[in-house]
Length: 393
Image 1 (cartoon, rainbow, N blue to C red):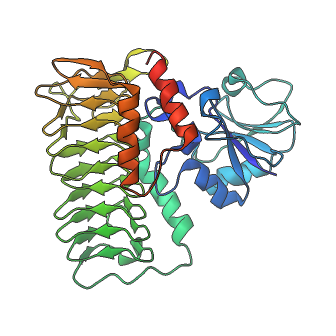
Image 2: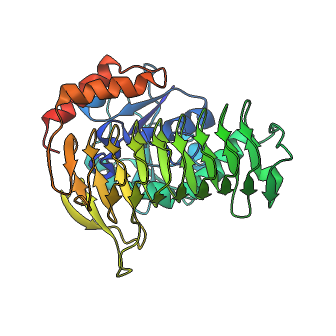
């Protein structure tokens, strides 16, 4: 038995984050969506995604018993309902399919997710549905994801001791330090949600964390940082300055002063010193961003939305990103003034214009950056970047 997480027709809706990963590999809280399904079900999890990503994210080797919309957060109730499905069943909520009981080698089409086939037995689901179908949903629903993951990972376990040099506001039981986590002389506020520090994570002195906040395995929060939740920083991140309601998927740096608000960064990104993001228009109106399927500006319906940045992208010192800026994969943004609100992948430049970032130079940079975290660029991941450099983004 196994579970397949399908992109379910939503891959382009979650660009630029999904240029380099399936929908089910997004990390809205402590865990990736796929990790949440694995931990809660105990079953192998694979992905049905774009062909160019299949080598890096294959289908499970075991026979699939269920195919699930990969954009769904795996709450306990949802996982239980999915695992109760039989072949020929479809779990539905508000007319859309959430999951299918697998039948042999057949699998649902993109259209089947939007309108479940009438010949299947529909099983209604009335529980909580948390869906990440647009990139800004990651920071919108980050607090819910953290709360569910925190309960899952800490229930029945004891945190490492919280050193007495810290000031704790709220319930100290909502602070959990995994083995090797370090936090000294900081202010930790749990009145609005939990604070979770992963293995060997470090929060340096003078930092202020207002939960819900996640600092992933081996990640660092730099001295004097001001972190407003809900915010989640994946493994090996470096975070400093002022951050509010933002998600960094992992292995990325925002290590210096500057403001990051209502934003999502992919992996292997670097924001130069004093990079700032605007997250609110001067008119206080809804923020528009570049949408993947529309290839045009779309209304987020949000008053607050900052920066959405794909993997391996960078900004130079003092870069200013306007409200609702979308940056593709492996872009290098620098210089004075505000760059455009949509910066395609493999772009090199800023407000005064862009040229194409040569793929060989981009790969060389990626290798150097990853080596600093004792990782290497695999052949399948290199193939993904080469593919992205060759298409219209």
